[in-house]
Amino acid sequence: MKLAPLAKGKEFPKALPLRKLIGPSFIILGVGLGSGELILWPYLASNYGLGIIWAAVLGITFQFFINMEIERYSLITGESIFVGLARKYGKLAPYWFILTTLVPWMWPGIIAASGTVFAAALGIKYSGLIGIILLITQGILFSLGKVVYKTQEQIQKAIIIVGVPFIFLITLLFAKTPDWTSLAEGLVGKGDGFWLLPAGLPIATFLGALAYAGAGGNLNLAQSLYVKEKGYGMGKYSGRITNILKGKAENVALEGFAFNETTENISNFRLWWRRVNIEHGVVFWATGAITMIMLSLLAYTTVFGDPGVETSINFVVREGMAIGTKTFPALGTFFLVMAGVMLFGTQFSVFGSNSRISAENLVISNQEKFKVTNLSKYFYIFLWLQIAAGIAIFAIGFTEPLTLVVTGAVMNAISMFIYSGLILWLNLTALPKPLRPGAIRIFFVSAAFLFYGGFSIFTILTKLGVINV
Image (cartoon, one colour):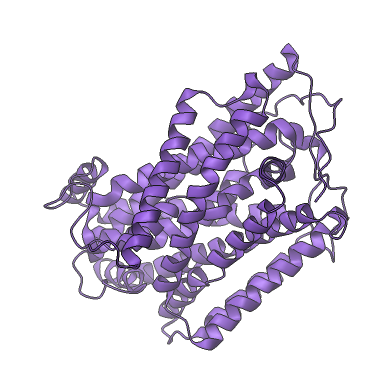
C-alpha cells in the first residue's frame, strides 16, 4: 500500500447554498429506516413498552456526532475517511474495513423482512424465494442508473418523501392521550414499572437497536464517500463512480488535497461546516428521530401486549392487520406495502454503501494491483458478491428476519465501538489545529465510544456465560 501525501496548491471551494447540499443524509437515513426505525425499536416497543425509547434518541444523537466527524475529515481533505485511517493506522486498516463491512451485513435480514411484509400484503405465504427475487431486483436497479450515487439518492428521496409523512399521519390517527403520555415518560427513561431498562430485555437485541438507531456499523463511514461524490468542500476535486455499462468514466482521485490555512480558506470551511451540520441535523437526526419515535409509538398503540409479537417480524404484519381492522382493510394493506418498500430501500442503500466501502478499501490496500480507475468494476463485483451471499443464505434455509437482523446488528455495534475512537483520534491529530473538533464534539464521540464499547463487551460476556442476566 502506497498512499501519496496530500497534494498542495488547491483552494478551499466556496460553500454551496444549503438547498444544494441536501442529498447524502437521505441515503444514510434510508439505511436506518428499515433496520432500527422500522424493525428493532418498534419490536422492542411492542414487547416492552415505550420506556426504552430514550435509548433510540441517544443512539441517533451519538451517530449524528460520529457522522459529522466523518464528514469533517473528507470536507477538509477531499479524500475518504478510509484513506485517512489507512494513513494513520497502517496497511491492515483497509482489510479490517472490508471484513467488518461485508460480514455483518451479509445476513439478509432486512430483505427477508421486506419479503415477509410484501407477502402478507399480497396474502401469500412467504418463502426464501421471495427474498431471492428481491435481491436480484436490487442488482438490476443498480445497473440502470448512469451514476451510482445519484441512483441511490433518487430512490431514497422518493421513499422517504412518501413514507415518512404517511407514518406520521397514521400514528396521529391511532395514538391516544395515554399513549403520548407513555411516550413522553419513555423519553426520560420511565417505563411501566421500570427505569431505563425493563427486566428480561434481551441485551443483544438492545445493543443491535442502539447500533441501528440511525444507519449503523460501517455504513456511517459511507457518509465520507458521499461527501466526495457530491463534491462537497475539497471533495470538489474528486470524481464519482459511474455505471460500468452506461456511465461515462470519471477521473476518481483516491488521495486528497491540502490547502493553505488562509483566513479566506478557513472561513470557507466554517461556512461549509455550518451548512452540512444543518443538512445532516434536519435530514438525518431530526427526521430519523421523529420517524423512529413515531414508528415505535404506532407499534405500541396497535400491538403492545399482543401474544403474536414476541418473536419474528410478525409485529409489523399484526400492525397492518390492526390498522385495517380499526379503519378499513385497504389502509392496513397500504401500510404493509409502504413498510415493504421502506425495507427494500434500506437493503438497496446497504448494498450500495457496502460495495462502495469495499471497493475503496480494496484499492487502498494495494494501488499497484487494484487500480483506482477500476473502482466502478470493483463496486459491481462486491455488489453481486453480496447478492450471491444473500441468495446462498436463503437457499440454505435461513429465512427468519429478526434473527438475521440482530446477528448483523451486534457485529455492527462492535465495529462502531472501534472506529468511533479511531476517527476521533485521527481528527485530533491529523487535521490542522484550527479545524479540529471542539470540546462538545469530543465529549459526544467519546461517550459513544464508551457506550458502544461497554454494551459490546457486556453482550459478548453474556453470550459466553461469564455474566448471567
